[in-house]
Amino acid sequence: MGYFKRLSGAMVGLAALITAGSALAQQTTITLLTAERDETMQPVIQGFEKLHPDIKVIHQSVPFNDLNAAIESRIGQGDTSIDVIAADTPRIPAFASKGYLKDLSDRSDEIKAGAPNPVDLEQVSYDGKIYAYPMWTSTQMLYFNRALLKKAGVEFPSADVNKRLTWDQVIDAAKATQKAGAKWGIEFQQFDRYYQLQALFESAGAGSGLTGDGLLKSDVGSEAWVATAKWYGDLFTDEVAPRGVNPEQTDDLFFNGEVAFLVGGPWSISRFEASKDLDYGVAPHPFFKGGKPVTATGSWALAINPKTTHLEAAQAFAEYASLTGEGNYLTTENNPVPPTNPDAFKSYADKMASLAGKIGPVVDLINSELQNTAVGRPRTVGFVAFETVMNKAFADIRNGSDAGETLKSAEKQIDRQLSRLK
Image (cartoon, rainbow, N blue to C red):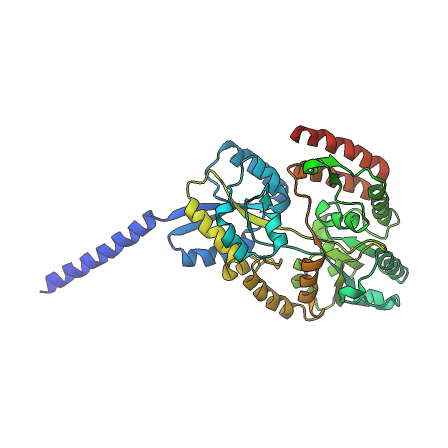
C-alpha cells in the first residue's frame, strides 16, 4: 500500500508539473514600445499580468527623439515583434495615414465609455476613425516661489482661474524678483518645444501656425506670429529667462530656488513637494491681454501594430491600461500625469491632493484647465514635419536669432515639406 501511495503522489506531482509546463508553453508574450522608463510602465504591466497570467508583457524603451524613427523603420517595414505602441497623439494622423496603426473604430463604444472626454477622443482620431486608446492627458500651470516673490514685495498669484494673470503682469513680477535678488525671473519647462509654446501664439490670436486644407499650409511668418515670437525671444535676450540649460534641468532651477516663476506641468509636483526648503504655489497659466486663456494638452495614447500576431492579447493590455480605472491609474503611479479614464482620474486626484500639501487644491485647477482652456496640437498628417522645423526655430529665437527672419525661413521649409503630402 505504501508503494502505491508513493506512486500515486508522484503521479499527482508529475501531473502538476505537466500542467504548469503546459500553461507556460501556452503563455503569450507581447512587446510594448514606449519612450518611458521601465519604472513608469512596471506597475501597469504587473497589474495586467496578475489578471492575465497567460500573457507576458515585455517593455522596450527608446528615447523620445528616437521613437518616431523606430515606428517608421520597424512597423513601416512590417515588423511583427512590436504589438502595442505608445503614440504621441499629434503624430497619430501621420502614422495612421501611412498604415502604421490599427483602426480601432470597432472598439469606439468601449473607448468612448472608458475615456469620455471629447478632447481626448479627438486626440486619438483621424479622418473619422479611431486609431489609439487615450491613456494620458496634460495641462500647464504657473509655479511660483513664494519666498522670492515675498522678498520682492510681489503679491502671490491667485489659484482662481477668474483671476488669471496676464503675461505682462507675470513678466513685470519676474523682473521685480530679479531686482530683489532672484537669479532668474521665469523659465519654461519645455522652452524649445511646440507642445508648450503653442499656447502663447494661440492666446495672442496668432493661431496654431498651420492653415488651409488639411492644415498643410504654414502661417508662422504672419505678423502675429512674428510679434509673439519676438516677445518670447526678448525674455532670453533680456536675461529674464535662462539660456544654456536643457529641458531636463529646468525643474532643478526651480527646485533649488533660482527662479521665481516656472511654466510647467503637474508631473513636477511630487518632486517639489519632497523639498523641505521650497515654499511654492501654483496659479493658472497666464494669457495675453486682449487674447484668450489657452493651455497645452494632449499626451500619450496606446496604439496597436496592425501587423501584430497577438491581436487579442495586445488589445487586452491596451484596454486595461487605458479604459479601466485600475490599469489607467497604474500607468501614472510612478509618473503623475493626468489619466484619461474618469475612475483613474479620481484616484489620481486623491493622490495629488495628498501630495500637494503646500499648494492647496491643485486638482481643481487641473480640472478647470482641461475642461475650459485646453487646445491640442494641430490634427494633420504634416505635424511631425511641422514640429521638427518649429522646434529648431524656437531654439534659434531663444538663442538670439531674429524672430522675423527665422520664422520666414521656417515657413518656407514647412511649406516645401508639406507640399509633398498634399
